Amino acid sequence: MIDLKNVAPEEVKDVKKEVDKAAIDKAASIDPEIVGAMSDKIELVATLADPSKPDKMMRKNKKTGKQQEHVIGSIVGYSFKALDDIEVPDVNTTLFYKSDLMDFNEEEKNNKRQVKKGETFNLTHFETAKLLSTPEYNGDVLGGKFKAVIAYQKPSGTPKKRPDGRIALPMAYLRAAEKGTSIRDLKQLNVIDVERAEVNGKVKITGRKVKAGFEKWAPLAQARAVTPNMIKTQSGLKENVLNFASLLD
Image 1 (cartoon, helix red, strand yellow):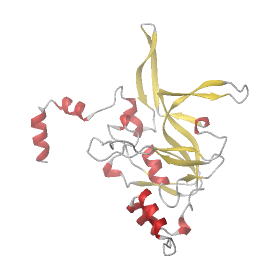
Image 2: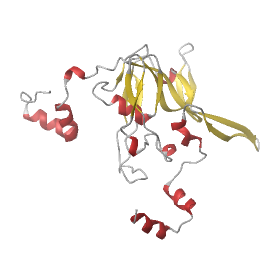
Image 3: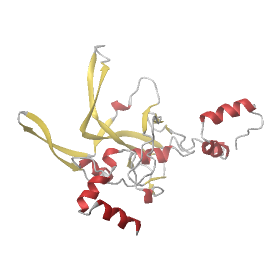
């Protein structure tokens, strides 16, 4: 329990300007003994990648000292190893996942599964945030050699909405916790297979297929991101008929 009795009023006022009241209420109820208690029980072993979307950046070559292009697949999740028996989120994505990597199935958002010590498990960005945003992990992955910390994208402008009308979650991702290390240097596991062929003199993607064991990432195998309008159009119903019928459900 956090003791706020000896905190100066002006300090409390400053905190309330920066932190949502709900977060303050939650912080005040946390037992300090559990904070971070599980952060060394998991190890980050690899990033999950979409090889159809290369992530390019210029980096200094440690041997030559020169800048060179570094290319990896876009990170779409993380692979961990359990260093103890633990419980982790088990939440599927929806059809709209390709356009929102923080997408999740609302009805399953609190689902969990057991993972035995020594087993590896894969999590989406949402599942990773769900796990590490608990007091027991406090945003850290401290097991094993590579240390990581979760970061959250600061929302800007008008909040984006999910197709179901709810406010979209800010992007959450892992970054290296120690200087001189980079999340980009970890091994990558591709969640989809990509077929390429030469078309009119240019190499283009001609097919995508989700890999076994990575079914949660299946929407990434679609050629285009699914939108609510696409679903309405494919139904064949007139929009006014569909809108009224939905009111009767």
